[in-house]
Length: 255
Image 1 (cartoon, rainbow, N blue to C red):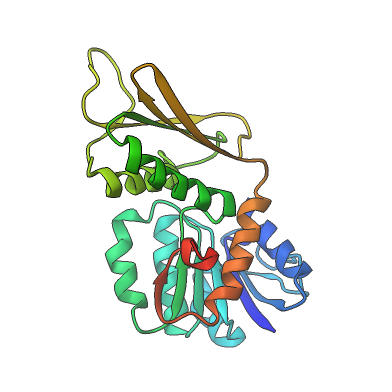
Image 2: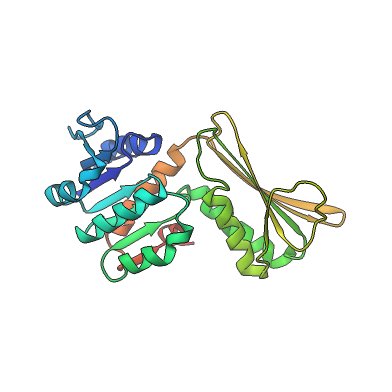
């Protein structure tokens, strides 16, 4: 049995992950943490929500095998530190962690195993692989990345869009990113990135490779957050036997 703790337990993703844990025969929720809904039922295994400020004491008491974190960047850094100090492996889907990558790697190195990814959907990880393949052949074409999410998403561009840009840049060595355009801005040798926010869009990502007289479009759409939750559960199983250090969802999927 894999014992799981979930931070951000009252959020959309946290609640859905807890629901998935409840449906998994090989998993058990032992702790749920958030800054709201304290002492309310978490939704699985008779666990109630604990205040996130007491995470260290909660982890010491419950001894989870894996901590799953879908929160915000500042909270995630603290949660990662506490997980490592309590010997809990990690599955982290919090976005906006790019500035902290070196710090996170140093905290985790040699201590626990962690799967950290901006997107846990299986299809998105295949999407990134397809982008790398396309860039190898048509990397000299104009490239534009467009992402759309619900109106409540705080960060922009999405972590998935930034990973798409990084994936393409590794192949073609084109590093300059342009975030939207306004006024006189003739296109040069850049990758354009554009963010749309509105309604309840779960997550759309679209990459345009435009050449002379033709174009290729590669697109991924998430129909529900279950795509992300299912991937996180899959990663939680995989990370139990993974070597210490930071891993990506590509390793989980064998890509």
